[in-house]
Length: 380
Image (tube, rainbow, N blue to C red; front, top):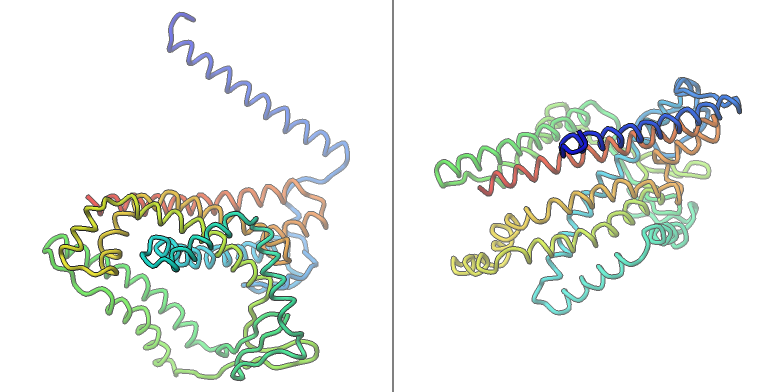
């Protein structure tokens, strides 16, 4: 049997699997024994108990009397908000800087290079402290807040700005905006299908803009076109009314975006350099100007090089958002830390953190892998 190569391989794999299972069983059983010996409660029933702590920023309704599960949901939505906004900003900024690094303008390319080198070589945590310090130290206190046009108040408490008063028309317009985005993507897909079939592409820009902006405006106007606004006003020791952009959120968003943008810039630059120079020369021969060459020829071909490492940067940004606890932003990690301190069930809280970040990372990877496969299919 041992002389058979296939049999040996199966035996070695079985022994390795048995070793891994044995180590796992020992660790789990030893942990459970120690928890029982120290009379430490285990299980996830604590999620149904009253949390009893306040969360400063929340995207969904939450009160201290709500459960720990609700508190985790608040932290999750806060994490998703900063991750999604950070990915969008970092992508746009990183692409612009990556293109600028290859610019023929000496000053522009050098400034882009300095930005990339500085941001990549300064630890992200330090950058978060710098941004947070700028917002909390340079901005005036609440009583001396800077007022801009009567609709924006700037202070150490953040940026408080006017916001439309609650009305069904705004909710409907929001859903119409989402529908417009979906319809714009469908229209773009149809335009490409027509182009592949006939060689002529229907207009994409103006119809997409009409769907994304026009549809919400029509719905908003049809439901009464409300214009009432919540204006921020001083009440007691703080402002009331409107919406607020806290210094913690602003510092975290800017820190993550500017830091990740430096890495994305290098990814974009590498992707552009990977495109054969003959493609650019052919585009020049056709009379395309610089912007058209970049948009229609270079970037579409560079995407096959850009997308895989770009996925890694999106994952890094999402996981780096856990540093929010250092500047007081109530993300998922901050909520988990408070929960651990109050309940003592650290294993369960950490397990929830691991499961959530794993799920988010897998979702990002699946989407980017699908998009990468889609781009390869289009290129053929």
